[in-house]
Length: 169
Image 1 (cartoon, rainbow, N blue to C red):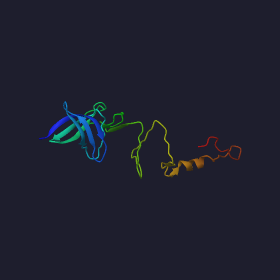
Image 2: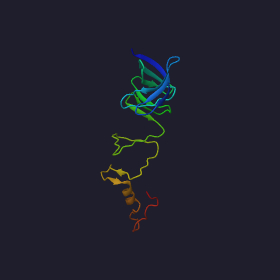
Image 3: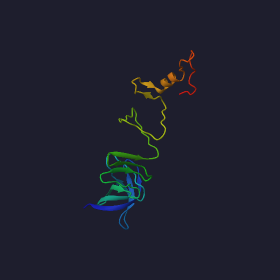
Image 4: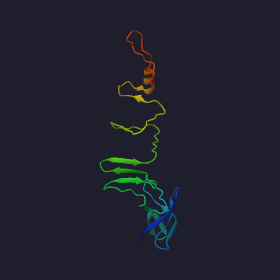
């Protein structure tokens, strides 16, 4: 016979096999038991999170966990990942995905491709290497545009040429 038990987790230990400790019904405690998770998804709940255990004889495994202290509110049909620090990825109605964090780092070994007609930012953009403009079909880099602009002159009204721009690009 399989029994479902609600537990309050006291710890989760990382390893090839995740292990947990927690308490269930009055006087019932569990230590060094296996925590099974869905393929492709892993989490490490904080102490105080809730869980559901399956128990058959002496075999006990944690199959689900939740933490209502940090869970974000969702509209019907929405999905989210969240942490106890307030970070979240929220897939909202209207096909909007909202990511909230202090710093977002994307690591791609070959390329990041954004296929969208518009990219907006409210802050600065910084690149360690050059930026290439493809709009005019020239494929000019920002450096080559500076090299053209900075030393340029114009014909002067009375003959000769103007000086180079005072403000360099």
